[in-house]
Structures are given as structure tokens and as C-alpha cells.
Length: 210
Ligand SMILES: NC(=O)c1ccc[n+]([C@@H]2O[C@H](COP(=O)([O-])OP(=O)(O)OC[C@H]3O[C@@H](n4cnc5c(N)ncnc54)[C@H](OP(=O)(O)O)[C@@H]3O)[C@@H](O)[C@H]2O)c1
Image (cartoon, rainbow, N blue to C red; front, side):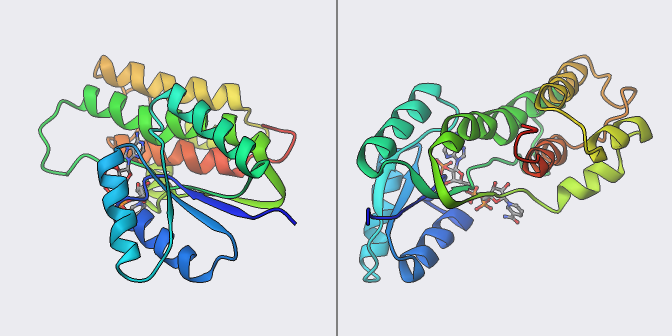
């Protein structure tokens, strides 16, 4: 039987690093700590090695389509696919950050929603039978949902929302935030919350509906 493989994005620190550590202890297969920065990723792998744990490293920046596609090609070539994918990489502006909301909305959605969706587009075809994909969202997505207009809530909660419609809604949020009109558009004042709401709805798609 071929070697099983688990891949964690944003594995060099925080929750991603903790997931890699736990997988190294429990998973019967190769565990890849991926990170956008080679130095930070390799330092994290070395830190695990000092605990007696063996993680492998691969560079993966989810905001870079070339990095996503070359990583997907690597796992297909070496393992014939992927058994476990943890989409953990994400960003959040600090509450005290004074970066204009328009920029926070664009940057946050780019990573947490659009780049994670790019990961799914490239990696879902590689997931082996019985495999698992975990998207690390947030309870904040539920709060953001409850603060959306009734019309938006109806679409996000619906069983028949399509990928195209969801992408269109996320683009609409970014566009309205650029113009300072997102509140009139029925959106809450949280870019992080909307980005994770998009990810949670993505994770609800039924096979065949996505
Ligand atoms: N902390 C919480 O309370 C909490 C609660 C709910 C959900 N979450 C979610 O859990 C996940 C991890 O959060 P955390 O608290 O561990 O955050 P963190 O400590 O800031 O770690 C985030 C990780 O994501 C990586 N990352 C960011 N952009 C990336 C990109 N374009 N490509 C690849 N990696 C990228 C970071 O890499 P660099 O080191 O290179 O920046 C880092 O390794 C996120 O999705 C977050 O939204 C966190």
C-alpha cells in the first residue's frame, strides 16, 4: 500500500504548527508542514525535530497560484494524491490596526476566502478515497452571518447556493467595502467575519453541488 500523506497549510506557527505536531504524534503516514516562507517553515520543522517528531517540509504560499499548482503536482507525483488536507493558513488584522477597512476587506478576503478556494480547486481532485479535507474557519463566521441583512442570510443559509453565486457575493462585499457602502449593502463591519463566513459556506457544499 502506498504511503499516506497529510498536508497542513500555514504550519510554521500557531494553530497550524500545533496541528502538525499532533499529526506527527498520531498519524500513520508522512506529515507535511507547509509554509509560505522557507526559512520559517524549516525552522518549525527543526523545532519539531528537537521534540523527536518528524515533519517534512514543502513551500506553499496559498496566495501564489504557481506555488499551489507546483505543490499539487509534487504530491500527485510523489504520493499519487493527498489523504488529509488541512486548510489552516489565514490572516486577521489586529483590532487596533488602523489600515482602512477597504484594504482590510480586500487583503483578508484574498487569503481567507479566495486563496483557500484556489487550494480547494487544485487539491480536491487529488484527495484519495476515504481522504479528509478540513477548512479552518471560525465561530466569528456565525456571528457575521447573524449580522448580515435577511436577504444575505437567506442566500448563505440556502441549500442551493452555488459556487458562482458565493464567489459573486464575496466579490460584492469587497467592492462595496472599497466604496464604503458595505453596510448599506447589508454586510457586517467585519472583513475577517465575512471571509470566514464565505469559507464556512464553501465547506457546506454537497458533492456535485460545488
Ligand atoms: N487564533 C484564533 O483564536 C483562531 C480562532 C478561530 C480560527 N482561527 C483560524 O485558525 C487559523 C490559524 O490561526 P492562528 O491563530 O494560528 O494564526 P497565526 O498564528 O497568525 O498563523 C497563521 C499561519 O498562516 C500562515 N499564512 C498566512 N498567509 C499565508 C499564505 N498566503 N500562504 C501560506 N500560509 C499563510 C502564516 O504564515 P506566516 O508566519 O508566514 O505569516 C501562519 O503560519 C487561521 O485560519 C485563523 O483564521 C484562529
